[in-house]
Length: 274
Length: 228
Image (cartoon, rainbow over all chains, first blue to last red; front, side, top):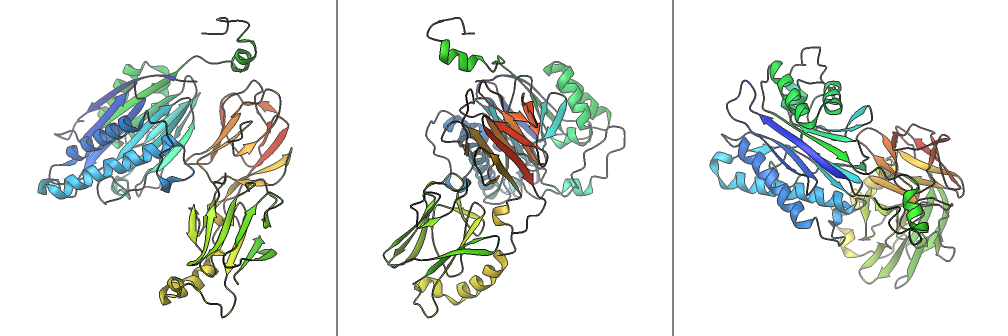
């Protein structure tokens, strides 16, 4: 079964910063969604994040229709799509790494990357850094990315003042810092009605998972992104804020129809279709 | 002549010789030289060849993979003391005392490391397995959940192949999430059941949950730290 997808994405410089170092790429056609949060260098955080999203798009665009199982050998045990997404992050990493070595004002730049790629009826999420990816299924929200920072993994509670940023700001992995990078991958099934939320920590440090769940479930995509960004800004907005909300829909194929179509299809042309 | 020792939970089950120029086949198939009767092991899982430059293990495109040092391998030269992990079984490769070994292996650094790591490996959980499926009905054995996604269904490409009327080619998948495991319904007129209830979409797996797929019953077992 193929899923239909739609998305809304919004990025905001926030209340304290002058430049937006976040970047995103969304495509319902490719069913690829990427958020990157740039950092470091003299003035190059935005260069890094832009290179990351470009690199991801380039790579997936090149491999998406390739039917062969040309998945990278080192990633045995992963599906073709998951290997491609991991390789796309590798490609993005090399782009940033080379750029940072070739231009002095880009030295030391890096970025996070969080990506969701929906293929058939399953999804792959991969990430490096601390930009979270959430999967919303029914009334539950689950982080499907692995935060690579020194925090204890606790989530922000909207009612309490956010915890001191210290440890949370230290990434244990980032794109573009070394020649190679290891991404975390999560692969699972998605169902009509599921939603994915990708964001930068400018949002997740200010807004709780519960608030993200409520907004993404109850509001239209556009309203959800706007509401979440406004909420983060109202609570200080000291960082750039980016949020992408993806909604998965598709004909809920009853458990019968696939089997019935096979058995009865030839006798009932057209009846089971649609 | 080198010897391969088949072990399960530190118990030695059998010993096998590998001859120079010969081949030792490993798998569930009864005609294998080393038969491992376990659902996690493919019919023809792997082989060891005695070649001129030494002894080499090759994974025969098995479903669940062959590991050396917790690393999944396709082919690899064997060193004295290497332990090969297939499912939950371990095969330890070793040369006989005084036997000539390939030169590359005799580099002093390599040699000391082999001794150390061979002992260390015994305490390391095999291939980080801490969750597995135990087949209670319609088969037997244990299947380690080492992959990001484990597929169960009628199709022969599935990690666990089950039979039954209306069961999907891929009936369900089990995904390794950042926190825990999740079971997902994929296809088929006959939905899998979890603890007796039909599986509608996806659910977090808890220890000892049972899954019924067709005529097969599987239990999910999860351990924080698994002593091997």
